[in-house]
Image: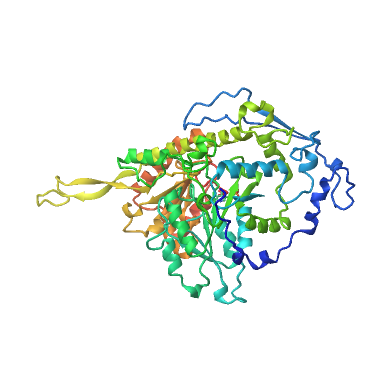
Length: 594
Ligand SMILES: Cc1ncc(COP(=O)(O)O)c(C=O)c1O
């Protein structure tokens, strides 16, 4: 990597407050605490002997708990679970020790050393082994992707107040036209323009009407500045389930270079990539696989290997083509360990991470010590020396945590589990997408009238919804074909969409669906969002996926058989129906929380 150029200086993009931030005076002192034998009269630390926890203990899964093949047999774990015990004080002299005294004490923004080091090593050597700028990226722990995004927005954008600021100062953020709204709700109250970019089943479109180039080239400056920041979910996009190919990434990256746009890549589903989706879709539909679609290959073949076949087979991050250092990537343990951890990390060029660290110093300081200790111990086990994370499982005993091999194995097991659910639901949806509807009475060629005997009912085969098999993540994005509904002449499609949503909440269907309007970031996309539904196949118990998918298809069929909307036809009827709802027993396709 000696010949690589350093990342570009992005300081012209830093917000006003980001530029003003100075290192925390207090935190700067922490390095001196490590001087052996020093009497620390400077720090305002509580005394660790008064922490009420003597140990932190847990039973936890083996890294091989889940099979690596979708629908594969569960491996028999040698013991039902491993036991973690975090002592009050580790006898180890290594700064990477995991104990209560350290983890629950005040610390620096970097977080506890074993976890910070593990994340950095995982990122630089295994997840993104080929970042094309000199010395590669830096990492910093966050409290999850939501926190990471809030910090990225704080780093790169100024709030805009219409009562105070000129329109030309208003900054903007590009995003997919249907998007994870929590992120947009971080941007909106800051007064920023939200600039949606057209998407297809893969993700953001570089070219064509509404594509990235179109949006940037034809920017209407009366709205404010041309956006200098992009928020994008590139794998298992929420809500569409698309995965952006490397080829598409290169096109988008080139446009971002031309218009000097920073890319904030939010990638909570990176390990949940489903190469079987395009194959199975093509098989079911008797079509050929799109050559650009996710295909099985070694993405690191031209560079350094990740050291793991599984990681090499995954579509890599924007970081892998980030020659300029304009990518800020958000990662989270929410989908790989648990959302309640509130733990993740940010990866970017060192100068950006340095600025973000200054924000962390005066806000979250570092993620919760309980969580850091628990996650560190699960993966690393108790640290006995100062060596780096061992990658080969034979070098450890079961008490030593998963190690890098186990962590990667765990991620692969999760992929297989979610991929299986995806396949199960997509097969049912695929098989159930057509229904027959009564197209009315037709008469034969004779001149007899409708009432006469040789008239017959004509049944039309119609498609109720359309979808692409998701190539990653936790969601299926359905486009509902209200244009084929027998009541389409009588009711506007938006009305049918609302009525159908309520229809599904009734017995026997009892399905709570994510309406597309929930993922529509602007008024314009809201006006199109009603056509879509997001289905989360991740949250329900595995054994429910097939019966619930069948219930869903039945619900569609029943809705297409309706001769009227039975009280669902107007706002009042809808409101009453919604008041009567019993959400609790419903199959929850929303995957609430995301
Ligand atoms: C795209 C996306 N970003 C962020 C999050 C939230 O992540 P975290 O729990 O790390 O804040 C979700 C949750 O579903 C998500 O889908």
